Length: 161
Image (tube, rainbow, N blue to C red):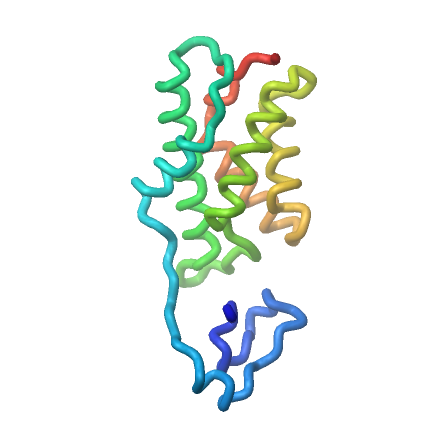
């Protein structure tokens, strides 16, 4: 059993609609663990290990995989910071979990290799499907800008199959 609202506290953010507070007697029978994201190095290795051997141009595949994983992880870290908020700044509505990050990786490779979309169109298509279609417009635009700035031109090295 997992509980994203920590079971016995109210979710004032509204991010977990349809969730209910757990009965204290049920929660008393459970172990409590707070899970953080895996560290940057491990998350980059995970991303890199799941990138298929595809054709890229302008650099070796291994170099591209490392750079792509690094940039994706940096983008996720900045989105996570925006989600957690800073004093005086309204946090965005969603973050990039490791699961979303891996989904985004797959979608970026698919859209980048399609040959039918510009790099920016491919990025926005991938982001919409992976995450931003389910968030408010301000959060979606913030996420798009962060990811676009971090990825830069890395997807231009993809070659259509």
